[in-house]
Length: 348
View 1 (cartoon, rainbow, N blue to C red):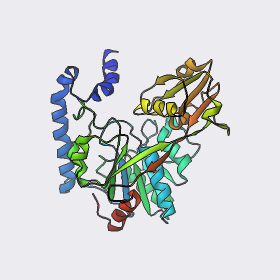
View 2: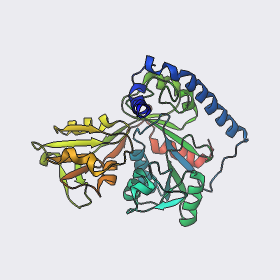
View 3: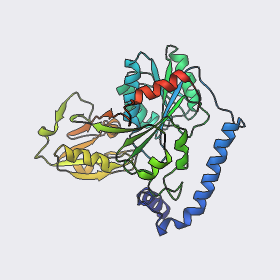
View 4: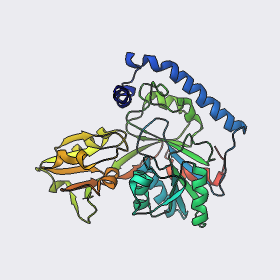
């Protein structure tokens, strides 16, 4: 139990912007983790470990840090823009949080507990084929075999999955940035910040952090805002409502995302007053988890609604969001930046 409590407190400590005394014993492990990460990347770059190149270009949308930062809305934005530009994309994902093994297709009615909450959400919202598998190269090949008309693949996460070659990498940060700047387990970083020097673009779902801006000098950077104004039924029904219909009622809000505070802040911008209940990212909800809202209305993220639909008993609403991407300094657009990489087909 003590170990579990320490593990749950780590993310909060990581984002205190400095290495607190409680994390000092983990510093040697972070140095070891960093050396192993650099060695692994070097082995792939030298060809000692072999990466698989798919017949079509791959765009990776990933994190440099642990936890969610807004990748899924960005993947949806990118897929919709690629389709509008005449491309035929597909999506691959690890299927984090799912219990399924091997490579599998994800359908709109697939089980989130089996294939993961984010892949099911992507299947419902994207209108393109979605496949999951720990081996993203195998997932990509299975997708192409089932959908040979697909001409570009977007990987939801997988920045560190070097087994899969990619034509472009997008790295997403939220307002927490890189936290204390340390690698795992003393901090939230999966790789050193200098890794940003090789990516196609950095996308900010929140205020930029100066240390990251300095490390990504010369890399196009874009602001992303997540807009959501109309709620949809979280119990699987077809109903919807706006914030006006919820004001003055007893409201509860839950969020099991990387930064639950981001969702709660969004609800406040809609003028809603509620009792907040944060949960860990990818939390496997049970009916008991929702019992606090028995005497009111429950609000949640769209990702949480995907998992909670079978266990919701009272009035509950999810809030879908759409990504809005600004232009980089100089006027360049994110889609144009990506298309340049696709036409060049230079693997990272």
